[in-house]
Structure formats: C-alpha cells, structure tokens
Image 1 (cartoon, rainbow, N blue to C red):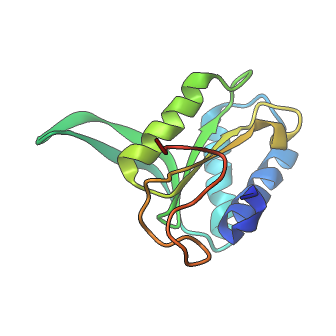
Image 2 (cartoon, rainbow, N blue to C red):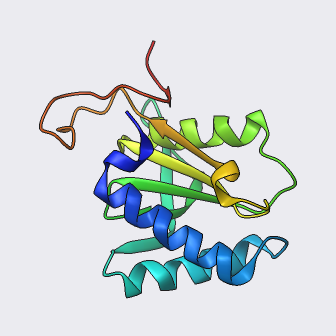
Length: 147
C-alpha cells in the first residue's frame, strides 16, 4: 500500500516537507522535532512528544523503557533522525517500537538529506489487530513485523 493512501500519513508528510523546505538539512534532531510538532499542531493534528514506552518482560516492568520521538493521533509513531544516512539499526529501532507499542504504523524520517523523500521509511505492524483504514483487518505493504 503506498504511503500516500492514508490521509494522516499524507498530512504528516506534508508537514515534514514544510519543515524541511524551511530549515533544510544539517540541524539537530531536536530542532526538527520541535518544528514538526509545531507544523502538526497548526494542521490540527494531535501529536505527543517523548512518549514513554514501557518494556514488560514476562511480569517484570523494566524501568529503562524507551521514549518515542512522537506519536501522532495515537496511531502513528514518528522516529525523527538527522543523520548522514539511515542504517539498519534505525529500521530495527522503528520495528521494535511498533512491536512493543502495538501501534499500526511508524515513519522513520531523516531530515539530513537534500530531498526529504529520500529520507523516509514506512513500517507496518502486521500484528496490529485494529481495523485498517478501509475497515479490513491487518495490513500489507512495506517493511513489517509479520512472520
């Protein structure tokens, strides 16, 4: 399924492009996060920053959990980077966040690129049991957690 079919993803990408066009590459991740949060708020999109993601192992709650850069509309994880290039560890991080959170989708966005579309990766959680955007169960597409 193409990234652009989900209206929320489309809006997030539009906001991300606006930030990138205004600031360009080369700034700290924290700057892009703050500016993207502002763009999303202006667009009327609910976004939470630094969302705590607890880790539960069997019955043990591990206090050294994770912090998600941003969660949009309580269903889309945004992992923001400003790195020379995305590495496999960045994808693994996004996939782990999907698995632990149970949310349906994550976008990994690297702002440190000349063209933002070259710095975007989408991940779908095929284990997510909520309804798909079109009302069907599950999801197909890009990199995912299936199998």
